[in-house]
Image (cartoon, rainbow, N blue to C red):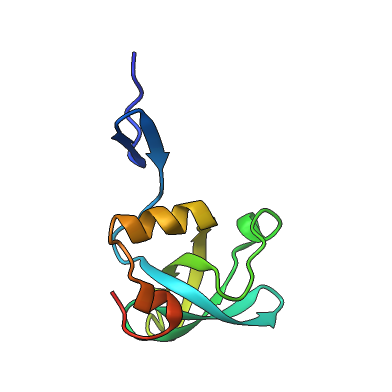
Length: 113
């Protein structure tokens, strides 16, 4: 019996699992590492948010400058703060570019989505 997986899309023989932003989540690119699990992230909605890596991800996700991430803005101070929810691998970023979910200008720091 096949599983019903929300993050799964089938292309020919290839099965791809790439999480996409849901609800109020946005794409972002890490601009600066501040220490203690805090990062400055340039988000797709033209805002720079100070984001933290929550404790449940801190030891599992190693995030560097230039990584593409999913940011979930806080309910309070939503324009200034947020949590990093997911980090994309290079292969996943290439898939997002092919499917036009993000643009090359967004990656290079120019125009956004």
